[in-house]
Length: 226
Image (cartoon, rainbow, N blue to C red; front, side, top):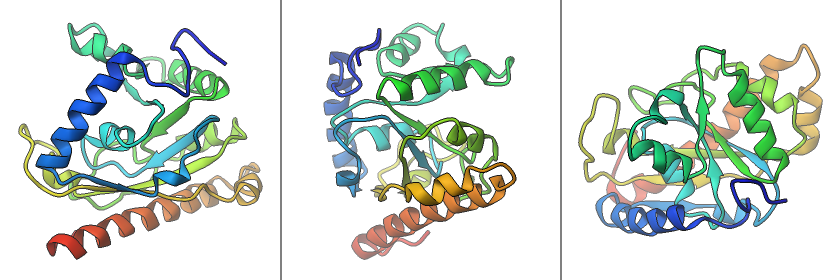
């Protein structure tokens, strides 16, 4: 299905151009590497759920993929010259905190139904030290409303490259690991009402496995420790 955003399977010219430029920059400056991208299918909607270390995270997830990923950003950024234009042309969805995020959830579901990949950070905020915090239970409501696959992702090193409070990009290795989709049968079982806490912990555990794999990859190549 094709929407006003274009095909969910093919990147537009703006994102493709930025992707090439930023991917080369990150490969040089951050020694950026991605593992497990074969787990992300070439077609079909799905939720990508990741730990959150840095403002870089949406880029780190989207750069190695051959299809676009939609993320949420504060709606106050969209009126800003240049930034707003980039956001609108790189599949980003506005999120209004004044409405409790209801419009963002509706748009997320619409894009999932149209076959897009949608990326979310269930922690709700960036980690101060790189360790994954507790997941906000709100994302479980979205999971219950879709039958699409869930793909866990783990990021390591991004907090050292551009952490909270940082203004400049530092030359620190970064790795992203894409995990296998969560077992559909298990998720279907946990989506029953009253089992939200189990669903949240299951998702957190799968993201943690991916993050640990990314940390091991960094440690083998640079002696880095989380």
